[in-house]
Length: 206
Image (cartoon, rainbow, N blue to C red; front, side):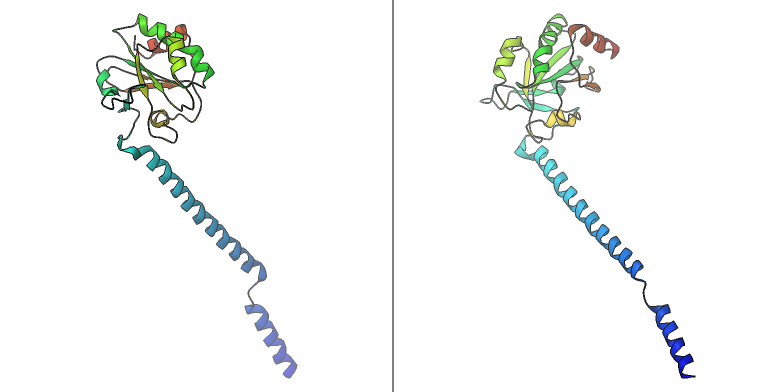
């Protein structure tokens, strides 16, 4: 009788002992949750930092369809602004450039010539963004100094408008707006005069 009772006790003990494998899986799930929560917290911090970088400075939020930028090269006159709203009534082309962008340098003469030939029909705005050097020589070299020039603001590197148009680092980039200020298209491409006119025609701008 004693041995039978001992045998039953061993079986009960064996039956109720928690399996080692299940305990290990449970620990793995816990660690996964910890890492997941940590990733969410880090992501929230990064997002908040980017958001604050875009909104700071008291310059107003830059959006793709309601930008308000300071005029390029006129830092002494903060009231000299370039606002999309001021170009209502005429289709508008916004071309982004930076001194380090070789392809921007290559396409700017085509934009200049197209802007000159379509004066009164289409407005052109040249926006200096993601700048790390001296933009003045590029403006002078390509003869765009008499057109509307603006300086991008906010963002992660003075590129708030560029980023609002989903720019992620590549350039050149051009945005096309209709006469009501509606965004028609954003092109991350190099244009010559022919391809620029073709794109504008396809968008109903000319």
